[in-house]
Image (cartoon, helix red, strand yellow):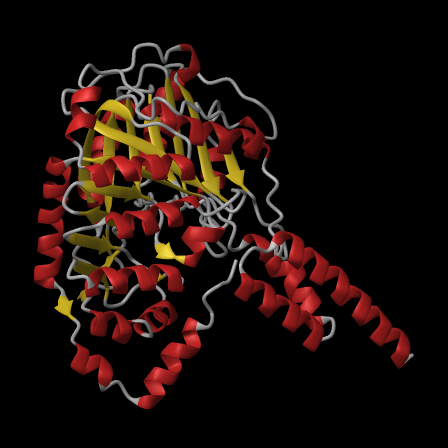
Length: 477
């Protein structure tokens, strides 16, 4: 009997090893999984089956259509294209070519991008444009709570449905999962004429492999003319900006211009994947009158997920860190990148670049704060400045290089966003927007605590053990 069990274990381990060698590119991850499978009979195999395999075979991947044109990386609806491109520094021109190799989607011109802080600014602006919609509203949100604030959106949807406006709402199966109170899905189902979908809905018991593979995007498109994109969810927590225990500080961006077409493609792919079929959108019939804005920001969308060939957002981040000459500014709610990003940050600081990292003193997950602290000492010794913002929890996501290149969207600086979640960011060039964002960041820093090398070096041994133990929970992917 023991021989049979051993034989089955060896065969199973060999099969999984072959799978690892074929589909895992990361050496550390491969070694870890193979060791676990051989050294932990059956348990290791079960863990790999649940956590190690990316099951997301997205139909939307086959629908993606990239415009590949090696002679023209800058898609334009403006006569200013050549003027703007010629004025870019050579490092930016090189970075554009690098970014195009990572993700072959061209920059668009004629865009206007306006930051909106917290739900107090963002929600009234969203509702105004929703209520003024003439044909179609598209919303994708990782978290869409049902509360007194989001009820305003539901009431607006009912008004639009009565006017014949098409509405499609896509929510994430885990982000909106509620065990003890009414979920938004139940409320959406009550609105006749409204279409909604749930991205990878979990079954009971919850399928563990899908806990990580979430649609973390936040997108809103009204009539193809106005879009909102960033890291802000739909919840009353985003208006409780003075509530230390329950409030959330955040930022999203109102977008006008041709880049909305790229944002729409992301929504369309996710919607059709969720619905398992191609769908008709009003936007596709009325997208010939794209508004060209005088602000004329060159911008493009970077869409990424675990179904991708490689980690596009992480590569763009890494390339941007290497491009920097003077200043790097990062605002993120969670900071748990892998060693390649940490090394790039430390090398930048050691070269004399002003590297600033702004993270919450306490996020909504204490164990993530502990894990982040494990990386602080090496960063500080290299010259990185770390600021910790006080409560309420700051969920903002901003990345600026040399006060000109800006990266905004839904991705956090952690392995889940870089490898295991579906994310959407926008990269752009704009001194003016960078200045506005730097002013916002300066206000955050004035209220934040500057982390010192002395305090980190004097953390107790038990706390260091705790921090490093939690860091081990960082998923491999």
